[in-house]
Length: 325
Image 1 (tube, rainbow, N blue to C red):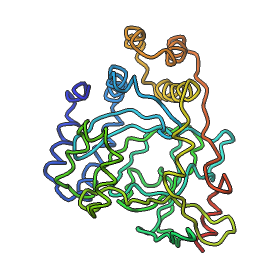
Image 2 (cartoon, rainbow, N blue to C red):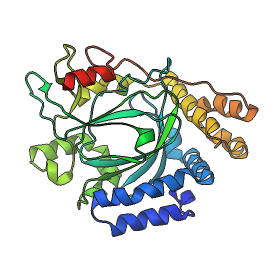
Image 3 (cartoon, rainbow, N blue to C red):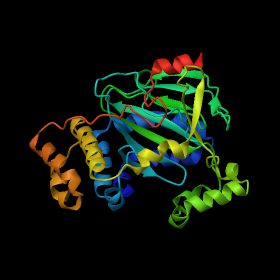
Image 4 (tube, helix red, strand yellow):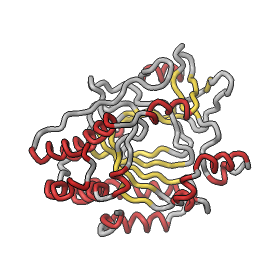
């Protein structure tokens, strides 16, 4: 369904920039203004929505507590362009961490916050070392910012960062790319290799080719402030995400659908004729929200969880600052 967006010159320009700019950091700098142009174009945004709701793969996807609601925009073997949604805090607080401090391995991310309040974030020094026995880790804050003050913003590969729950439903247009081109990049799109991802990763680690393939280390950690207020602790990624990856089913589907259509409605991107024409092809859990948009009935917010899988369950901006002192 990517072809629906290829009529826009944004895509041609994006592909040209990617092809002409081998240095990935330079590519991200050059692409930032283009992201701003894309989100200023309502027709382009409407077609992003259509691209997803005509995509059989997207419509069959099973939502979970792990994968926050999103929509695909465009992707190649060298980059992925997506639209992400961030639900607000029920009490409109701005200091609650949305998740653990984490990095995205070898991926560079540039983010254009174009709808809603946006979120606050901290960046940390790259490559913190976690003691595998005590799980203690030293972390240093390098930047503290709100998206409204640095937009588009960039997070480097291996650079830990944390997002705080926004005060209002927010959306970003985000581009991901590996920190350098590798001959193995095309393998990410191989459906056969995706089906044997776990044993393939095991083989790569055991043969010492982790860096060559640009994948995460065998043990990847997320981080959080030590509950005793001194420094930070690590938690293995698989352990941290286990509860949210297991959250699936009708409740999660409806939560995701409500957030998606609250965004579509509030951003003025609902195309009534398109959804009336295609409603019978769209999963039933979306139908209530399509009908609400058609009727002009406001879709209420869904809210971000405030408890995550760390010992203290919830931690705050102040806890990070104290732990880093």
